[in-house]
Image (cartoon, rainbow, N blue to C red):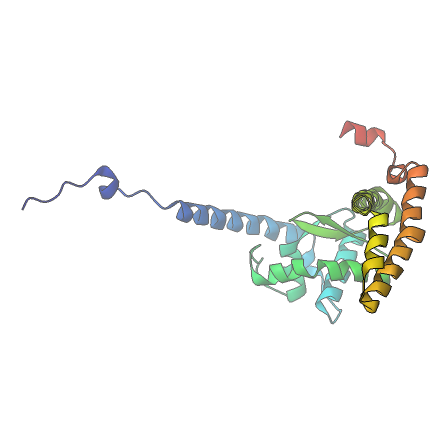
Length: 222
């Protein structure tokens, strides 16, 4: 029986797409590690020694040191991880230690605010830095906090618009469970006397938008 003729795809199989992606990521990680190694020397991170006992304490102290010596400089999560764990080489961004570092940043923010009167400023997906002074917090942190508050207030008003107070009253009158009835009565009282009044006051004063920072020449140019 004559051999079956093979197609060009069978004789020259195309490389798997996943393999190409994996190789590209590995190459990018190596290049990034080289850049960070050079930055380590430039920022003199190799001379810094962490003293705090906890991991979040070490991160906080490192960020404060960097803010005092290199104001406004973002430290990448890989750089932070290398320093606090005392690693000889820059870890890859997807390593478990780097992921652990990123997962601790919320705790680091709390520590910076409560113990050191500093704020944590994140560069999304890249790294973080500690605030340098009050002006830094005013220019960077406060507008972001106001925007977050505005979104939360909008969601609050939207949720309140779904509540029909008259319907709630009718449901209360029909309830036979005394525990549930009492809970609903107390919650309705809180909603009517406090929440609705607070929402009304915000609307009368121009809403939460009145709390947003003014447009500056720099922001208009951006």
